Image 1 (cartoon, rainbow, N blue to C red):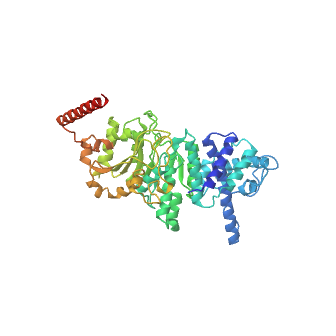
Image 2 (cartoon, rainbow, N blue to C red):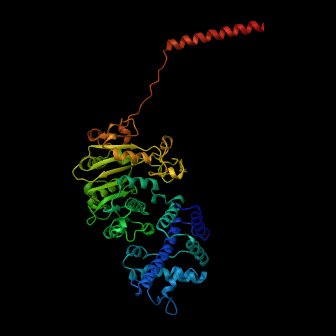
Image 3 (cartoon, rainbow, N blue to C red):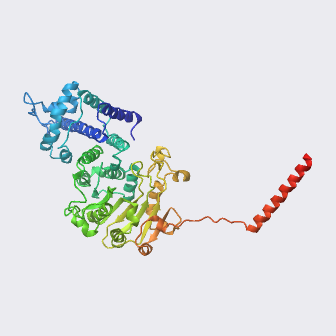
Length: 521
């Protein structure tokens, strides 16, 4: 967790942008991303210099080349001047010229030439980097403030960037890019990524799912990066994210970088429109909260998805895509709108039947409708399934999440202290606290879905439903279809008794009135 002082430093940076004339939160984070990337390049170059000095050898890998960049007068600026550690000491006007006219062209063109190896994914996303900070004074202020943020260790770097991304969401219109972090954590914990997994999010946005999966793996496998083969897989082969918004790709890439993943595969791809010939059956784990933007034209939808299910609805096409991307034995945790669970169209029913009969549908975790507020009030659920191509669904586990630890109105105020929030709270919850945060209970019951959970009645918060019952209901997967509500029995008195009591009361009132008259008379 980041401290209050770091939070206020970031707030200062944000306020500097706003008062300097950049009010679009996406543009703010984009400019910060570029500057952080320049800082990171300088750190990498310094590392190489230290290594060379220690081994008394020449530099193996130069991030910044020797000589000048040949831009502008006098043969250009020395590449040394493009380093963060150098230009941060320059006067504002000089710094503005170096960053805008030399460092950014280097990010766009020079970086790919000089740095094709380790950071190739980042170099690729920097090729259309634009410098939009309007004044030298604002740049000098932002560089100074960023330089003061302690970003030495990986955890702090990641948390700082996550906090900034939270500001994109809280600024309003861009909330669609952000799934609440505690819901992402829940989905990652439920799927328990393994060191040999190949993980994909086909609508990755800021790469929240991939970051959380990486953090889970580091936490549960302390020696993961000590093994050369596993380390190579973690940095170069494990994480894959697609998006068709280039700003999101840059932000997602930087998020992964600051969380210590060197070369993830974060690429431009319109997941629903492009053919997936090279991608099918490639991944062992899919984690996603895809956008549900309504309908697409048949013409603009990938033909291989239309073969799985003939539909224009994006939420169904994404489910078809997940099935296509997964290897047999691969698993998925994905968020779907409620309509997917009970929609009555042929496409809806076909897909649900496919999940239950041809694959292994493990669970439906119903989320409360306020989870995505204030951006959307939609009701959603997490679907957890395993691709088998040969069935295997004996029963489906349902859990009705009623509270996620935050108020379900537009404010989303925490109902408990920080150490009691999320699916893996730092402190054990009492029964009363568990009623305000159901997520730890979801995690605790999930491993028992083939044991104790089978015996729970359908009046409980979680229960199992046999495959036959689901088939009999036309493959309806909405929890309310199977949940039984207990109506409390109230014993009503017989009307005769009530009337007798009323007559008795009336008699007492009359007696009292007569007594009152006698006293007054």
